[in-house]
Image 1: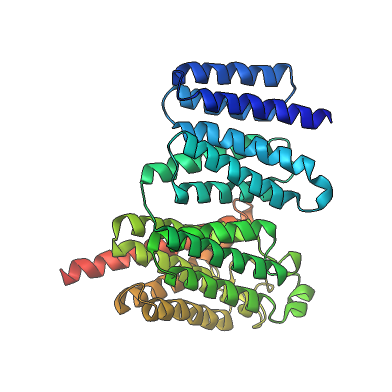
Image 2: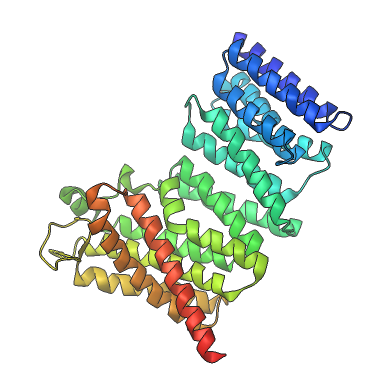
Length: 403
């Protein structure tokens, strides 16, 4: 009961600050927020939440973040946590937390007259993703507060408007995909919220389902070929962990660059960002197929020395893997053309970039990952970024020659 009382008091205090926001100077409210944080830290022994609140109070007092990015995260986290505590025996605590957080954020954004459906939807998805990643970590509340606040600031500053029907369709489609992928044991809970977040961004900013479908094909191919000769890969010690399930690290490493490119394309309409998107996703697909198929294709050679190395060695390549790499890149390029994402020559450029990016992934694995400088996810992120950059440079070169 003490926990519930403490959460209720914090929620009431935060809500009182929100209610007072139209009538009091924002600097005074920020000062009250700092004092409130100090009381939480020294008296209430709620250290990490207090630190997060203090950071947001200072940013709000300095005029760096708007009211919705200050009050919104506070009330949504507190109300969600209160409902979660009250419903802990139901077995649906995360769902209750999400529903409560969404209701609190919508109220805060409407009250501060800063409501934007896209921004609110992305903030809620970011919060759910962070909570699924952080679990019961002590600093989870602090990171959630700051992460949600920065999400609101970023997407409010972009001032990108999306049709409500498009947004609703994106949320329903991506949520359905996440649900069935989770039930199929291909992604874990962190992967579900990452996938839904990325899918909503892709559909909203490009105003078409085509870009999401390309990511979906990458996911299907990756999941299918992860299961390819899985027992043999387990015997060799090179199988994907957690039974082939993928999580948030896989999502950010493989499609994070593509999602960023989609946002920039939606804002600018510049085809160079479509090239970056296709180049990065081609790299992710080609690398996945090369890794999952190539590891069963005989003894590889190290890309830096061309000497034989054990299967699964970072930087090892095989002819079978290279063939799979080309196939994966061409699949994504072909989809990009058929779905109208980019002209044929941009799609061919992205295929070439995908092959280059995949081999750069092997090079990064040999030079960086084997020395412990990067993990697998870091290597994949660097590779997809490289593939996107190569595609952009090739596109700019072609565009210069044509013009």
